[in-house]
Image (cartoon, rainbow, N blue to C red; front, side):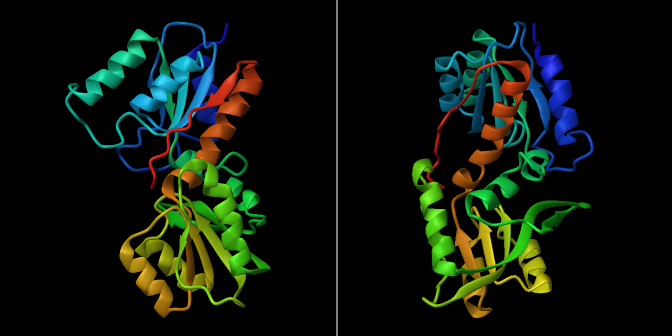
Length: 257
């Protein structure tokens, strides 16, 4: 019999949950426990009604997510918040959430797995945050348009669309960095300057980052917040499923962003 507390202890240790800093609303780790033995694990990027219904359809009673129950801050338990909680409790579904611990994990993390999907080999950390690094970076010799096409091929199944700053046809990527999700920020662009990165791959970023990139000869590939953060939760659910001999699945619930 595998309980949620046994899985939680293992996952917290694997992801270094207790020692990894994060935003206050992340509340990494077990967010909602359940009573029954874990019989199925479902992964989703966001805790949503679609994700919960997907877990139910897959006969999963553990939902592993990247953006958890409290991502939009504390809210009264009414309306959508109440309906989601009621649905979880009525179906005895536990919720485990991992944000930056999962982003930065060296084998199951969003950033290292996205690099692998794009044919890139990480050589150094990137995107510092309170003493840790979230993203990855490296060197290569590839046409930037080819790299962009790889990104387009990756996101096509996730309801996302790749957007880029202007790319000259013969431009080559030599030094790259990845920070999934909302990875284009003032902080990451400062690192880009310091590390002489020529191509930055992110999920999304503010409008001004595109203007900045064009004027500093930086290429930014915006591959979609949702799409770039599907890999970690899928990998974590599969890993836990194999370890405990429990079926695992992925619930697709694209946001279009």
